[in-house]
Length: 419
Image (cartoon, rainbow, N blue to C red; front, top):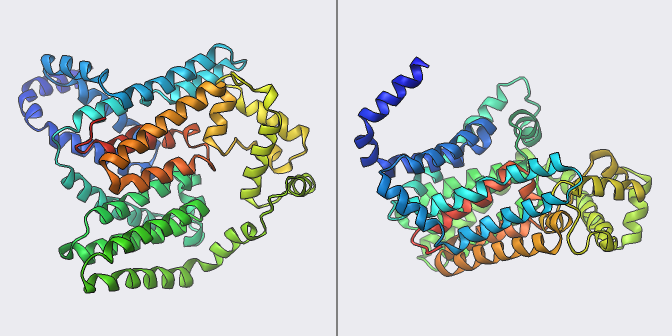
């Protein structure tokens, strides 16, 4: 109690100083929100609610003005609408506890996009972009060293599973979107003075993305490097050697350190079948490793049973029990064993809240992509990657995906954009 009183007294005494440095504090909070993803759930959560508290630590007239601005943003309203649809699905959910948990996870959708939209106005984005571009690779290098000297070390190629998934508790699917950020900052900030620096950042982030052993991450990386190369080729002759240098460096590192792991991970994808009966037979009599076929089969099972879910869905908390029942009914061994979710956010929303949830998600993503294409085309590829990834992962089922969607993406859109 005494400590709390001391902190309150310190804040009252230093309030004017705090107000004069709001921009610097806000920059630090955004920086912390982003780099804390691979550091753990606790730090990331604290940074979110620190942003919420920061919003209200202002003069009364400013708070009143900012609250009025909340209702003026169409994009913020679409985030709110998506959250309201989850509450609607909670009404008829048989598993109310699970549905309440799912809805509570989406609470950042209510306040985070609006706060970022308002607080980011007239902000020095170049500075925060630079610190993120530098800070993210540094954090991952430090984590690689920690992993190397830890008891969990089992080869650098197992870092994604042994460190991020098992130790930190974050899936590599979400880590990839943090590692892609510096690459897009480099694409945005392409000039001769920072040529070597940007190239080094791209090489480091690319190698860590490869270490995540994720197929969609590999595809997004290749497309990002193509975008970077295309932009470089509009520059001078000297610039044209940089993509070749980056490509050769990444290729050499891949061959020396992670080629075996990549081959083991992606080889099953070469045998992917689009014949539903073949997929059904294979997964009925064996624990297959082809994750792409798993996704195809899950979508096939859910679509084939559409009469059970149309038009209102099953309820916010009932999608997973329903999928488990489908797996058991069709003897989908891997699905039964791992209790796989839909691995498709669009399908997930349809199963939870029917056509209303699917429509709310589609409209939200449409608005995000429209604003990006119109106002922030340099980040359009990044945001499009996230939307496309939602076809193969249930990104909004997990806390980290929610923060990427409601925190990082609105921040990328907020620089001079009218949301």
